[in-house]
Image 1 (cartoon, rainbow, N blue to C red):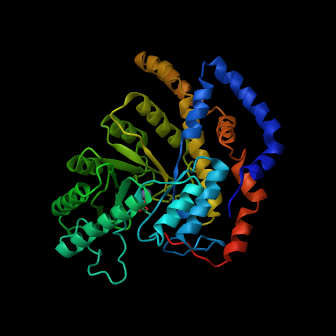
Image 2: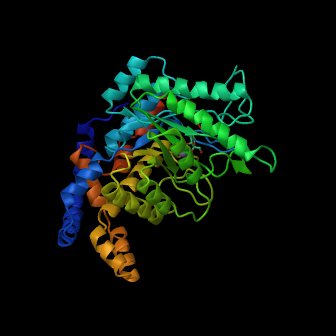
Image 3: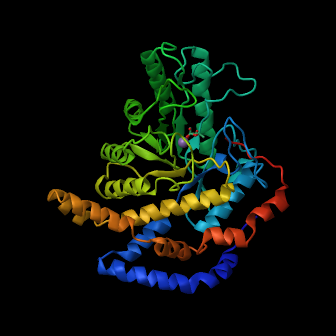
Length: 426
Ligand code: LRH
Ligand code: MN
C-alpha cells in the first residue's frame, strides 16, 4: 500500500480554509512577538524521526498480547508501513531496525524499497537480551557483561554482525541496550560486570567503521529487578567516554525512575557533547512505552526547550538521532505512531517559540515568576497550525489521523495481508 500526494491533497481540500484561519490568527500573535515564523516552519519540516521496526504490530506484556489485523509480516511490509506514516506526516523519513527481528534477505531490494519510500536507515539495534535458537551460549547470566568468556565473545560477535548488516543498508550508528543485571543482592559482582561491559563495548567500538557512532542506552530496571549494569545516564556517559569520541549516551524517556528531571540530564549531556539521541515515548510508572506526549506533554516540552537551547549553544554536541520506541497494546500501531509524531512536532514547535534571550534576562534578574511565564506562554500556544504548515509544505496530510481513517488504510492492509499476519518485534 502506498499513498500518493494527490490522494492527500484531495483529502486536505476540506480542511484548508479552517487551517488558513487558524494559521493567520497564530501568525499575527507570533509576528507581534518577533518570531521568525518561516524559520520555525522549516525546522519543523526538516525534523525527521526514525520509526522503530519493532513497533509496527501489536505489542504486549507478560500478561498477554491482543493481536492487530493487517500487521506487516516482513521487513518489506514494515518499510511500506513506515512509508505510509511518512507520506501522511512528512516527519517519519527513517526507520530503526532491530536484529535479528529484521534481517534482510535481499539487501538491494530492501534499499531500493526504502529509497522509493523516501526512507533512510537510522541507528540499528543489537539484541543480546534474548537467546537465539541454536546459540552456543545463553545470555541468561549476562551478555557483554558476562563472566563466561564464551557468552561475552558471542555477544560481541553479534554486535559486529549487526554493524555489518547496518553498513550494507546505509545505517551509520549502532544502539546497544543491555538487559544485563541481577534480580537479587549478591547475585553478581558489580565492579567485574561493569569492567567486562566496558571492555566489550571498547572492542565493539574499535571495530566500528570510521564514520559510525555508538549509542549506549541506559535503563534502571526490567527485565532485571535488583540491578542493571548500565542503569543510568552517568554509567552510560562513563562507558561512552571510555570508548571514544564517537560513542554517546542514548536517552529513552521511559528509562527513568519516577520524577527524574530528564530535561536536566539532557542539558548536562549536551554540555558535555555526549548526547547521541532519543527513544521517544511516554510513561506514568515504568518503561510503559506509551504514545509520546500522552501522559506528560509538559515534561516533553521542557526537554525540547533544553534541546533547542543546546542545539543553539552546544556546537560540541553532534546532530541528534531522533527515534521513537513505543509498544502498542490497545491502539492501531500506525495511529499510535501518528499521534507520537504529532506530539513530538508540537513540543518542538512550542520550544522554538520560547524567547531564549528574554528567558536569559529573566534568569539573570532572578525574576522567577517571569521565567515560568515565558516558558508557559510558549507551551500554552496552540502551535498545531505551524505543524500543519510544515507538513503541507512537504506534501503531507493536513490531518494525518483523519486522512489515515478516511483512506481506510488499516482495512486496505487487512485486504492485502489478511487478518492474522504477525509482525516480528516486542
Ligand atoms: C529496552 C528498549 C530498547 C530496545 C527495546 C525494544 O527497554 O527500550 O531500546 O532494544 O526496548
Ligand atoms: Mn529504547
